[in-house]
Image (cartoon, rainbow, N blue to C red):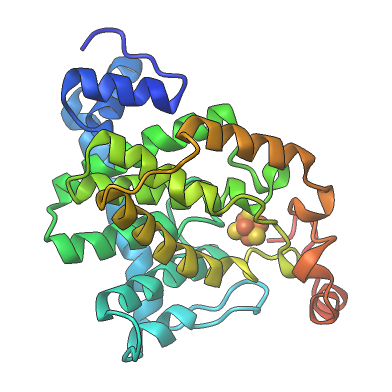
Length: 295
Ligand code: SF4
């Protein structure tokens, strides 16, 4: 492949269809082209990130993790030890792992931002859950991670991945789209299905506000990662079944940008609206507010 460039999801899809490969391979080829590193070096670098993701998923299952603000504690551990009554056991463990990663992040532990720390649980746990079902190899997971990276890059360039600019749909929404596309590819979905998995997930995150209680990335963030992971898996499954987003992927991203720009600042990580100013949220703010520069 020569001179790989893509500004939109349509570009990415056209490149994949023309080359007869997945979105992951196109993004990997782009990375090789832009960085000048060999395929092996780049694959190993992504594999190292998968290792960090796995460590973060396991950390909260091994022992309870408490966030810096003490607003969340041990939910990953609790869910990991629980025998589900409604969910498929792998899905329940997937939900546990999403919270484990986010608790790790809330405790200033080591995670991979995907695309941000606040949304860091969705991609790893989705990949873990899908790979358990599919029996995927680490190599296949790494290629799926490149698919998520390509989709995330377009969303970052054409909208935003900052909660402070676009609300939580820019963090958790984008992450859910990245994860849905990645696991759709991991499950053998066509590039067309992959981009529609992304669109279905992002479309159903539109308008999601960022209202962290006390300014800590804990409430609602940790549990939200768990719940949106299940949405990512469902979006991938819908796309694999042949269900498409009525609104094309690039138009969904444009809508996300437009909604983010129109969203009041109270819902953009300022902790001046929503859950952050409920009576309980205000109490947290009075007793242990997180100030800029705090550890
Ligand atoms: S609510 Fe705000 S801080 Fe929490 S995950 Fe969403 S964007 Fe990040």
